[in-house]
Length: 334
Image (cartoon, rainbow, N blue to C red; front, side):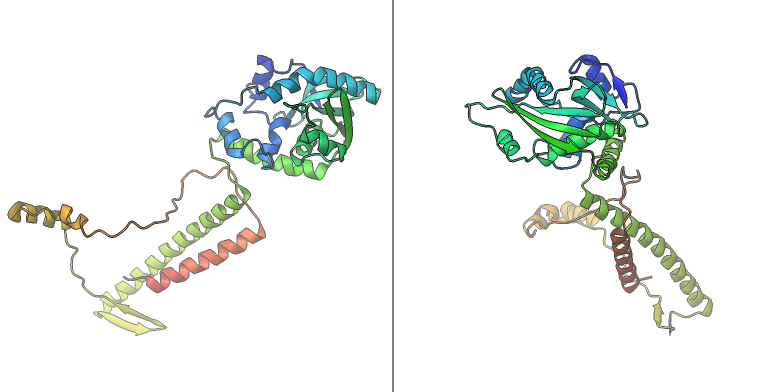
């Protein structure tokens, strides 16, 4: 891991997190739970708005201020309990510089770190986090934060302590490195970061699957329709060459016929108004039925930030494409 010498919450620290020295923002441990969709405090969309400059970052609230003010005291208590010195620092992955973390404490050996939480109690009663720590429980969003910190160390940090400090006392819960979970978080972070860089709204997994399947089916449908139209033109040319207006064979009936031209209602309404003084547009409004909901999907020319590629998606793509092709064949008129 690369240790970056920065004072946390300084302007240089904010610039580092924003990735001003690389190709885009760094993904830090404080945001990974949001990206993974398990944070109760913020949504992926809200974080995306922040990282693309559409929303101001959260302001310091009393709970956050309490955590900052108590952090040094809590770290000193952990050092006394653990028996090994540690100090705050910033780190980033050796090979992936946008994978980063601000550690509350890293030991001199570099193999152990501590994540400090100082829960806030406005009325003096035991905070929920303290109660859950007494039961040996760590919220999923904090576990994700710690796994990301260990991932940012490039495997050098082998374990961490979750240290909950309240009312002068601390509870320590050890957490081991989980490489599989770290790879899962990395995949989600990579997709989210691309959405930020490309200015694409981040999607949920279900949306990615559905949108990717629809895009593929739409492309297959367009290609099939182009082929279908070309074959229809061939048949039309055969009818013309043989002087026929209709022909049946091989399971199809081809018919060429004339239809009445469409009425130019705009011109009609203007003529009636001019010659008879009746505004048919206003009159028609009196006979308008209730509004109805419609649904429309538009294919964007720009490629999406993320695509799903799974067996389940492939099967869905095939089913939808087959259904569209069958519908187009049954309803086609030439």
